[in-house]
Length: 165
Image 1: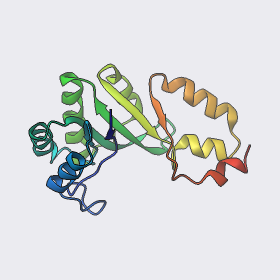
Image 2: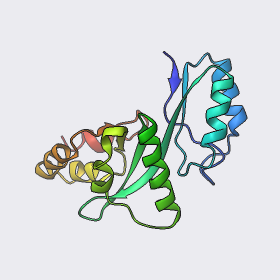
Image 3: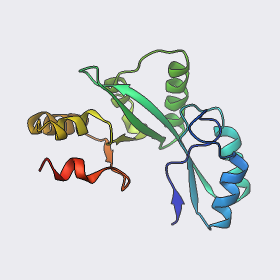
Image 4: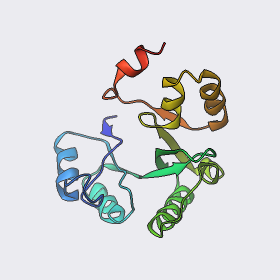
């Protein structure tokens, strides 16, 4: 299986200018089996979904969202719908974000059975704990997250972590 799991399009204003048609066409040309959309809203999801199906590519609907932890520190998360119920949760969360309501991580954890939740490590409170040598807080936070994945990109600055081992 070949695909891409962190794709943003023209619908995430100022972050990416790739047009949805070009995005799906490139995936088809590259022989992808699946493709995701993880914009900061769900405005382009229907067009993305239909374009993927027209090109025999499995669409993966996701949402990039910033959530506040219990200590108020905000971190970026990627949320993916596992099923139709998860998709409805994404719609609700996207609507709340568009109204300016701050969403707390614990609210999302309550509906996590229908979502795949990935904490983007770089810039997160976990990275802050690791860099500040707050190992106990780091372990406690990881245990509290439970069924959430921690995403670590090869583009992250490894020197931050290596110097603090």
